[in-house]
Image 1: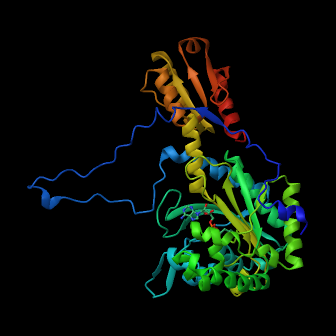
Image 2: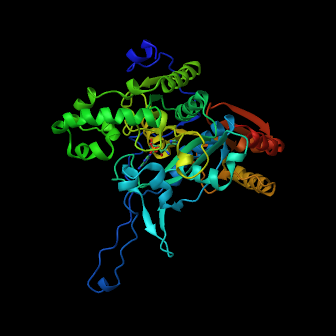
Image 3: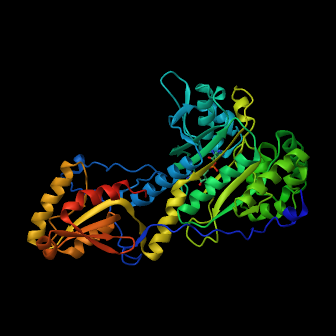
Amino acid sequence: MPPRKKTDSKKKTPLKEKPKKKMIVKTASKKETSKKAKTVQPKKESKKDSKKAVKLPQLLRGMRDLLPKDEPIWKKMYHVAEEISDAYNYGRIQTPVLEEATLFVKSIGKGTDVVEKEMYVFENKEGSKIALRPEMTASCVRAFMSHGMHVQPQPVKLWYLGPMYRHDRPQAGRYRQFFQYGGEVLGEKNAVIDAELVCMAYNFVRDMGINAQVKINSIGSLEDRAQYIIELVGYLRSKRSYLSEESKKRITKNPLRILDSKDEGDRMVIEDAPQIIDWLSEDSKSYFMSVLEYLDEAEIPYVLEPTLVRGLDYYTDTVFEIFMENSEVSGGNLALGGGGRYDGLVELLGGPKTPGCGFSIGLDRVANIVSAMQQEVGETFLDTKKVFFAHLGDQARRRMLKIIEDLRREGIKVYHNLAKPSLKSQMEIAAKYAVGYTFILGHKEVQDGTIIIRDMDSGTQEIIDQKKIGKAMQRILEKKA
Ligand code: HAM
């Protein structure tokens, strides 16, 4: 490995990219919208009706509802995920949320937190152990084998978006049901594939308006790692008394995880620990160098992180995580995504020798950050395919009713509130729907047979003939978002 990369291990490349311009519109600022939503409380019981009192159903701990107000950000995430996956030629896969528990135990590893502490496992009526999926990589590999994808042209490129389940300790950014967007490439080992997956993960976060930072490392082949673990365990044993109780337990069970510990005492010990990069074979080193060269070529900024090992057992060679750069927003210090290569997993699960590599982004964490950033400046994403029809005055209301009915007959749905007389309150509703355009009909327009179209992003307006409303709507609906 050339010395530049080794000595630069904490340095970012200067090739930072600005996030793409996103569709935004001003809404009420944080202060204006900080009124707390009222939750329904059970009525106080009188003695008379105490027998009838019912407890209101409660949301399960660690779970959350996503409400219509959250929709613009989630819709944007679905859209960006689809666009990126299409652009890199990935096909969508949807697998059941339930799988045999052994699939995850074998793949993720017995001694890992996910399997040992966090997996939802139960027995079905036949007495088999079933798990709610804690991640999708193992499910993709299972599907790859179930559908004989190894005989298709390789590599097979899959993407997914859906809910995962981990019985984690609930806290900010950590939920028991959370959503991931991810990509997996099976059937070919080439450094350009690892780099492509890092690019996709980075681009997703950046397209959501977050300045992303990639942390990357190589944990080498299984043989490299076995050698390194002997060295690491020897070192950790010599410093045992300085380690936290949790890390002491991990020395024999899962020593690599100690490198990830956030405990201050552990961190001091880890600083002087042997680094895995020094135990890589020449092949693993040059593979890793190629991945980094491709990332340089694609101008993806990254930081070499020698202690990055990831919490799942299936990884080999490249491992990476995505963070928010210079995070000041709450939740900004948590990993937004992670991934890496897993060349032994298909074989481990009984399939043919097949390399694999992938990433997953935690959508709840991305949504939390985007929402916090938008509240700070009072912005929201616009849906360029949504249109609001606003009116001013009685005559305009009547004419508008006819226009909306005609559009409906043509199968075109628009937003409106004909009961509200004030244009200001209608525009507020339009902003709540986060529409891309508003068609406005006032007294003058009724007389002229025209209508105003306002672009809600730029604020520009154009006036068209009312006869051309249908065409204008078609143009908007067909336009690429
Ligand atoms: P992971 O690091 O376990 O990797 O999870 C990926 C991302 O999911 C995390 O970076 C985080 O953003 C999000 N996440 C994880 N747990 C929670 C939680 N309890 N609440 C909210 N978000 C969470 C994997 O899952 C691997 N399957 C990634 C991969 C794909 N490796 C290869 N291919």
